[in-house]
Length: 311
Image (cartoon, helix red, strand yellow):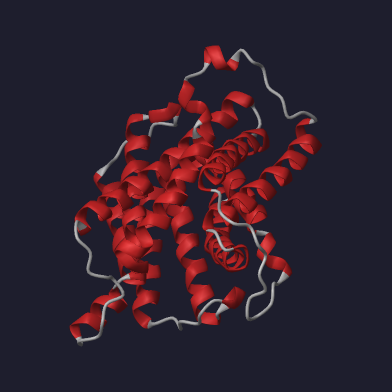
């Protein structure tokens, strides 16, 4: 039960982090600078937590010889996932930018569980679990796409622009989601090797911060803090803290329930958080009231998670 609660909470926090970082981007003028700020603050926060709990940020150098190279790639995969979403949004529009990575997360999460990839706990893909995953996917589609589909049926303009090679961009979205599920599994194994969830989360964020520093050095974006129309609220700087708690929660969650279930539980929280932000216009976001079809989608997702969890 605790694992489920943790998964839901960090899932709810993730869309809030996205809104916060998007708000930060308005002030700093670059998505890479906003992401770097988020990763840096998250790394500092996790470093402090690690020092308090483990009293050290270091680990044995023998791990580089005894462990596979992929064990250090969690933070890198997180940055790849972030960059892919930045590229996908202008090509696919908001709806499909959400759907395609989610599809990849579900597919890769169940594959990792079924074959025990990345030293994860093996959990066979049964017919029941497969049906549960399908229900989760259907629920996601209802939540993020059905209103748009209904709008198109009534002659309304879709938010998805006309773009050449659209299927190629959709495939990129699925691959990005698969990378996200791989990151979750890798960070879970890293916590087992280090015998510390907080140190594994710190290393993941540190790697991500280093990758983003490299990107910023190559891109050379102009840094200037500009005051937006609604001012610069204090909370626009805390996205990294929420992201750190998200990684830390995933590191705890995977060894407890397996990668596949961890992915779908977090997805339920993610969509619930997105709906809360839409309904109430939280964090200076645009208000988009919840519709009955979205509530139906949530119920379908809950049913899918229950099937995967109980069988």
